[in-house]
Image (tube, rainbow, N blue to C red):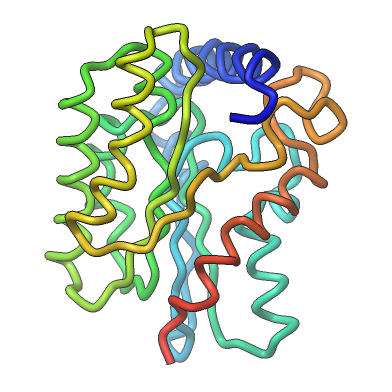
Amino acid sequence: MRNMPILTIFLSFLLLTSCGESAKKEEKGPAEETAETDLPQKNEEEKTILFFGTSLTAGLGLEPEQAYPAVIQQKLDSLGLDYEVVNAGLSGETTASGRNRINWVLNQNVDVFVLELGANDGLRGVPLEETRKNLREIIEIVREKNPDTRIILAGMQIPPNMGEEYTSEFRNIFPELAEEYDLEMIPFLLEDVAGIPNLNQQDGIHPTAEGQKIMAENVWEVLESELPE
């Protein structure tokens, strides 16, 4: 993988920041949490693309319109495509916490569901079968809610801190699930962004607005062909 030494630092600090964001989240009351994660109401004539993920999807440190889901919305609008993008990214999210909140975010019809979870599990050394189980359950819940929802899985990689076997097996979870459930897959969401200083914020962790644009292109390469007619 390109830029592995810098990427190791990038993802290691991402874990620390995610933990901090999780702690802040726990300190907030129910009203505050609801206010921060309310999903916008949609025009029933529009189709919905929902991005479900971590701080990478949430666009931590940036304005909402700079996060890659918003960049995707801008692209859809420029092409005259009638879609609403919903950014359901949450800093510090793991597959377990994502599994716990998936039913809430599905309180609307979703035409395309982009799943970006797992990196925080890998950095914390969560047992691989637990990560796989949680991702599998999220996929199955989405399909149970609406069998016609098109699911795109974002692949993720971690540095070799946890050992070669764990790192390799973690990376393989995503293509294996994509094959098992016949899903389209983004090979690596952070391709051409991770570990590149001028594409990341001062913390060296989260992508800049320019980095988010590259992430949007990585997503669009897969998403474009999955848009329902």
